Image (cartoon, rainbow, N blue to C red; front, side, top):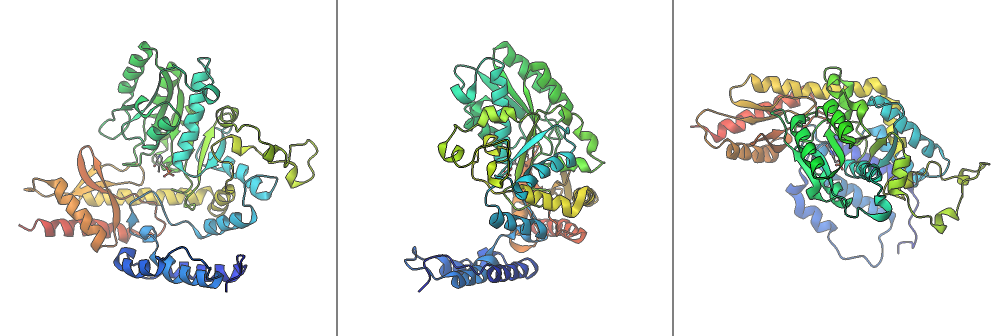
Length: 482
Ligand SMILES: *Cc1c(COP(=O)(O)O)cnc(C)c1O
């Protein structure tokens, strides 16, 4: 019979799981859907009354679960802005899980929380004074930033929204039609309302049109609507477009709105000097977010929100005092034990109390690669998008849908005499996923259905990029052999 408490053979278990991960990453890639019945048949069972014990679980994990994991790790996966985490970052994440199950109290992990936020701000060219807080991803990071915006904007009108709600104040948020949908969700969660988000049209390169923005701001001002925030995207999820940050920031100043920059994906792009000028105006931002779990290769679950002064976050998100927290340790001037202080009160700067220590992971990446290493990664990925764009331009049967700015290149198959190119490309896309190792996402750019590879995958090579273009041409030609 299995023991009533978890077993503690950690080293042996980690070694076995580590071996299975190596095999999974470097072995033959199999789509788990092709053997769905097999693993489902093993895993599907009622709640066990008696456990099987640690060895049995590790067996199932290693034999049945890990080998049927996600295709994200294949060299040709470019569908989402999610990559296989680096080995060092994986080890750091595991270290935090065990050695510091919380980010609080005066530990080395707590120290790295703040140090890594400072490094991340420097890496991404933010004003030195900007202070951060980690959260689980870009969605929550945007929510936290816009919570700060809401607090600040309504305080200008004598309202404390975190204490009293919005009252009768009419508010609006401004962002482009290409902005990430989490901006709308944030508006919903913050009580501003999804309908209060003005989706400003974009130009032919998917950048927010500042003239259109100015017009909408003017109309709203005439109606007495409080402009809560202008949200610009530095690297849109769809095409990697960078909104005109300076114009957006200046309009925010003119109309008394907070200026937020969503750089979840694209902020590290500033390291590539070919595109660095597009980030001019970033210094006007009141808040900025970036996802280390996107381009930096951290395990999923790490984003950072930066603001100029964290006291605004404190006013927006502070928890009510709780005896179970205050009673356990209180901040003294005379600090002798790591439990004499919670450290920086991150719990009051966002929406999480219990939280993993994420700083150690970001620290490990920046310590391993340095600024130079991250820069090379970003440049290499941007190069892949440019390489693909060249191939597309050089082939009569391919058409570019968006000129790469960062590491995304949207394109499609085309051929004279084909009427419904959308339907044809949908067919090509389905076959790509089923029959080839090339896994971009699909998208619509300026009304045209096409393929959207986003290159942040550390395993991708130039040959893989060539392979994608060749596969699309081959599948398209086969479907139109007339
Ligand atoms: C990915 C992304 C988000 C959402 O981030 P998650 O980490 O997936 O929650 C927000 N904004 C932009 C621009 C993104 O690319």
